[in-house]
Amino acid sequence: MASYYFLLFVLVAVTAVSEADAEKKLSPDFYTSSCPKLLPIVKKGVIKGIKDETRIGASLLRLHFHDCFVNGCDATILLDDTSNFIGEKTAAPNNNSARGFDVIDDIKAKVEKSCPRVVSCADILALAARDSVVYLGGPSWKVGLGRRDSITASRADANNSIPAPFLNLTDLKTNFANHGLSVKNLVALSGAHTLGLARCLTFRAHIFNDSNIDASFAKSLQSKCPISGNDDLLAPLDLRTPTHFDNLYFKNILAKRGLLHSDQELLNGGSTGKLVKKYATDTVAFFKAFAKGMVKMSNIKPLTGSEGQIRINCRKVS
Image (cartoon, rainbow, N blue to C red; front, side, top):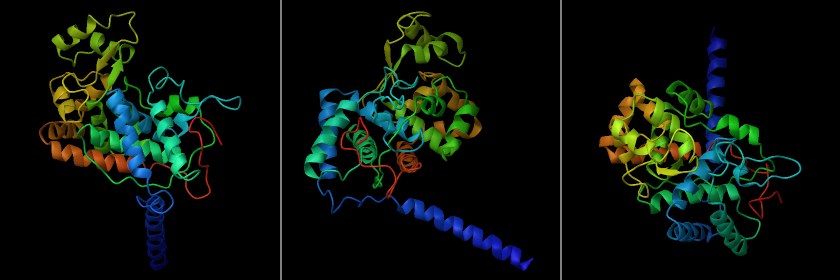
């Protein structure tokens, strides 16, 4: 019996050390010596991109999210198709909707001039997501750095891994759990929908078929997004402040004005519903939970050390 408990202790200790080592792989100071101008270059590029087109902030945040949910945060979403693989850009969740690639290209080009072959596209994407949120009024967090870039991508993996806007609460929880994210992470990170726009085809079923939606809200959208046609018509995920990072997304859900079926689903569960109500009345709590969730999400299976590569051009394998 004593040996059993000793073995159990060793297993727990080893697991704890392994998890700690995984966290230590990424560090905010990773490029302090090798690329000291990295942070201001990325920040300047993000601000320019948002000033040129306000939507870009939400687009960069979404790129990072969709990258991390497909085999980890390794910049696979940035790869163009090749003769060897069909990448993620044409996967259902990304096709004709993933944006911001040009901004990342511009930032990467400037980073390459400052410190050639040093900084990964995956790290630039993680920093750009953080800087977008901050510039648009949201919280900041320390971005761990040291990721490397994948040398392949898979459209099938993207189709299977990125949560769809029509998922019910059970499937949303399962999807996030499959990526090591908690129910609290699910609700907090869903708050990213305080920014940006969605296409008609992603919310049509919600406004015509669901009962958990404000009737006047649904009617106002039905005139723009009919039962057939206008698939690419855009509507703000947060009707009131779609270009400002705040907690109105949660207030909208309480008012049954969540644009997507998956948004409104958060109110259907006991624990998720409580969190929606909490974040709707406590911006500080939401910002804190969102920042923690982003740190956790950006640590999903990063390539480090000698894994992967440092791409020179984010769109293609070097």
